[in-house]
Amino acid sequence: MTRLFLALLVFPGLLYAVPMGWLMLGSERKVVARLQGRVGPPLTQGFYDFVKLLAKAPVPRAETFLLTLLPILAVASTLGALALLPVGAGGFTGDLIVFVGLLEMAPLCSVLAGFASRSVYGEVGATREAVLGISGNVPFLAALLALASAAGSLQLAAVAGGAPWVVRGPALLALLACLPVKLRMNPFSVANAEQEILAGPLTEMDGPRLALWELAHALEWVVLAGLVAVLVVPGRGGAFVLVSFAVVPLLGTLAAATARFKIDQAARFLWIWAVLAAVLAFFAAMAVRHGSL
Amino acid sequence: MGVLEPILLRLVDRARRKSAWLFHFNAGACNGCDIELVACLTPRYDVEQLGIRLEGSPRHADILCVTGPVTRTTREALRTIHAQLPDPKVVVAIGSCPATANVFAGSPVIDGPVDRIIPVDLFIPGCPPRPNAVVQGIAEAIELLVAKGVAQ
Ligand code: SF4
Image (cartoon, rainbow over the protein chains, first blue to last red):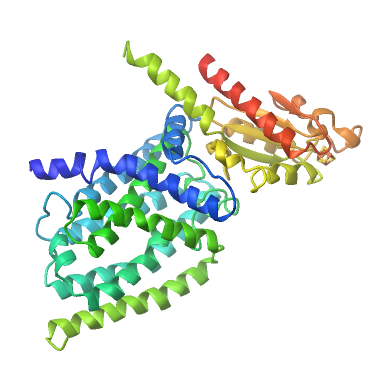
């Protein structure tokens, strides 16, 4: 129990994840700016944005309760997913399922928030987010399942350490292809398409509520980069931090180099290429299980 | 809270100074002012290094940038959008059009200038103003924003 609390509150939870999330957001903007020949915002930008948004007085509106509850849920569940990453404290049986469940809460909440805000832009954004969520989750979950079946366990720690590289390679590729989808970045920034549908599901969020959404987004960065790091270097704390941070310039470069897909192009890309990598991982996992590899 | 409060207030001031988000509203501008505003975000002027960002939604924004003389069709939209910005907020009018209606003055379809419709905190003159002037104006608007936050 104490170990779980430590994981939730200290590492890789609250105390590590919040500053790390802001640092990741700041570095991502910095990377994009440098690639465009600009100076870019300071690395601490995420922190300043958060404090400023917290201090704003939101415009009164009718749906306050739901719109306040959803971002709190998103932050809490993402923190929970973080606590299950097998670094530092150990996990428990079946934690892969809980991890995926908690990780999927934040996008789900943002879809709900989009509809609850009763704005056309919010609704269009929420619909796109839902479509992308499904397309992105098929390869994402398939890759995780392939890993789990190769390791013969549903424990994240065992999965990270146990899957051989023939499975882990393609699975990692599939997961990496899903990362920009889950972080709503170029070329998959269809759901929060700035200026096109205003800000997608978050169009009607303001003040502290928007601050919480930004925090949830920062935490999602830490979890997803952390998941990659756990699979690349299983069971090592220091390397975990380094590798998860290395994901930032990778995704930042991709975001700076690409324009936005249309929703159908994005879905098609995921259904072909990411699913292909996941299926490869799956076949490798089957081969490993039946002893032919 | 006693000891902590002044520290927190200073932190909030600092955060406001370092993270001003803009919402751009075209109230019938000829697009001249708009491209000068957008030019401020490009590599040459790069206002993002001051934490300034162009937001898609007025609810996210701190500073409302209005261009154009306010036509009959944009008047109500301007009022609505101004009401959607959470406090503290600052309104910046960019160009001669929102200040005086410029060459469009006297036209039957013009309801401006802007300060007839919503309160304006700062005018940036020019037709169109140079990006340097826009950047300077936004910097002054940020100071106004901080002052308004303190008053609140
Ligand atoms: S001030 Fe001049 S450049 Fe700006 S919108 Fe008016 S006419 Fe166009």
